[in-house]
Length: 489
Image (cartoon, rainbow, N blue to C red; front, side):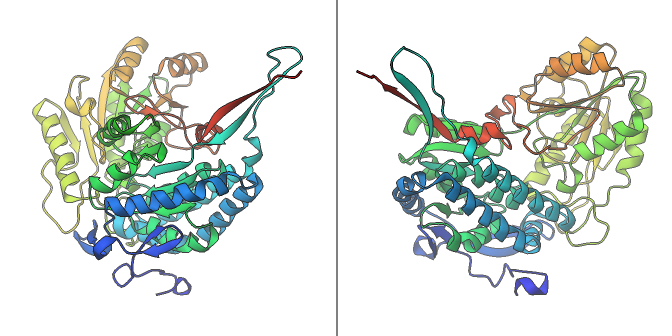
């Protein structure tokens, strides 16, 4: 198939390859693994299963290209990133369909996702001339200044829930900053990143960008531990993030940024507009992704005076969530990524009911069916000490907790190991500021959820991560400050 027919790459027939050193190659020994379609539970494609040797080849090529790329005019680097964004725009439908096929996400949402990626890529390209140093009057008669220099080879490891958007947008900042990049997509959703590698290969110098896929921990571990990789950025689960920190520490002193999970609170005060709260809770739960989003507002903390009314309104709204295949008309939620993950989500709900929560909407034991579907679920009567209130479920499950005082709401919201996002709903201007400031989270909305505003730093505190993305902080985070002292005689 071709782009002109509106469908793009046929994942079954396509000859999937790694991008390494400017060449599209098979993995060593022609090793492959199966990628599954979560909407059907059946194999979808066979993709390269990169070995440690394949990773070493990609990193070596990146290392060899590093000096030339870092020494290029920053405007040239920005122009390359803009060209990559243009190529992405030319293939939005194709990349969106690949994400829908191996991720199960509704096609209409993937089209939006890919459009967002192009915007972010151009944002970083536009900021290229902001990679500035400083002149510091540290001593009279001499010249003291700094410049921002790249790390060299950057390992960019991304999650399965926004494969095309992450695969495109998260290479832009390190490339503009003068680094070379080895991109590793999730083993569950590698198709769009591999296809982007094919499309982009002719537009970047050899070795500047590589894309490697792999079925298990070996590929990522080899990338993290390679001595030439000094900067690592990971988006994914807290468990994998900690494993990356350990591997990085065992193999060198490396700069690691992590965008991990969340157990995000949506706090509802009694003066809040409940219609807006329901809209925000549904939007914030990211149902098109079946709740598989680090920023999902999975904990709704409702004041006791409005909790019953809010729960009923949420029940009515969740009853309108339509689960189905990514290309089906009217679908608002796709499947979970795998059978194993569906079982994990179901286990969280069963445990919550055993601990005393009440199932308001959903099915504690959904019937087995083709595809990894799990119903939109609403739990009431959840207490802060329950596992479902403290652990990231990463599924379409909203837990409602109640509070009576402002301080209690703050304490419950902050009383988890995560700190990615928080939302506060109130008409009281002073309370909005007070509670937002009290939230131990990296990104806070007042009377809204979920929306990422371009240029605004995104990232978490506590176990939700280290570093900020989608902003100038991300661009600067791919540089190091180098200091010069010119002693004049």
